[in-house]
Amino acid sequence: MSHFSGRSALFDRFHRYLVIPILLIAGSAGAWAQTPQEGKEPANIVNIAASGFLEVQQDWLSMSLNTTRDGPDAATVQNQLKVALDAALAVAKSAAQPQQMEVRTGQFSLYPRYGSNGKINGWQGSTELVIEGRDFARISTTAGKIQTLTMGHVGFSLSREARQKLEADVQALAIDRFKARASDVAKGFGFTGYSLREVSISSADQENAPIPMRMLAQSAKSVADTSPVAAEAGKSMVNVTVSGSIQLR
Image (cartoon, rainbow, N blue to C red; front, side, top):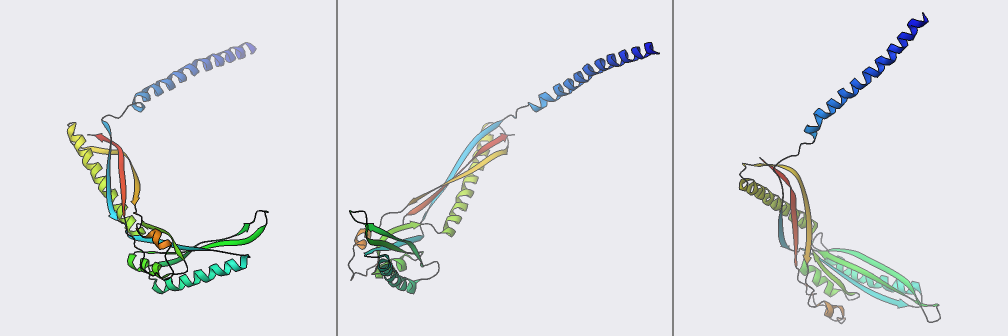
């Protein structure tokens, strides 16, 4: 009985050693059969790019007016700034109109002034008013009427609506040029068409705003001068590039 058991155990060990190599070979054969398919490279791939750009007149004007005050204590300076800003707001708000001329307060600062001995010997502060919108004449005329603040900055740009429309138009133009170039490349190589594989779209903005001719003079205008601030808008340009790869077919 013990002799038979010994032979059975020997057979079991031999059987296990025999089966394992067969399974390994079968697995290797399966992997070998799939490798050529996975490693197959696509053919007739071409990388191309096309750009489109449009330039339009800027339709948004922003003017900031500001002033500084100083005094022996913070409360005095703050009150002086409040009086100057309230007077400017009264003038600006009387001419305000949605989208055409909008009014908002800007930066406000109040800080101590130190003497040579390192101690506070007074206070200084500044306040700002911003008027902006599409009606250039209304904005410049209103800025000229404000006497308690002086001109700080003039900037031109595109309104949000105008920028969105411009970007959409330029993107459509760039895509059309990409498609036309892809067709030309396919025909040039003797193919009847193409299929799109990958594509990316990038955009860049460029603004050209000339400096108003009377900006410096306006900053130093006399109290009696209420003439409009002369300003001329520049142009904004949006450039969109479409790049990607196509497969000729």
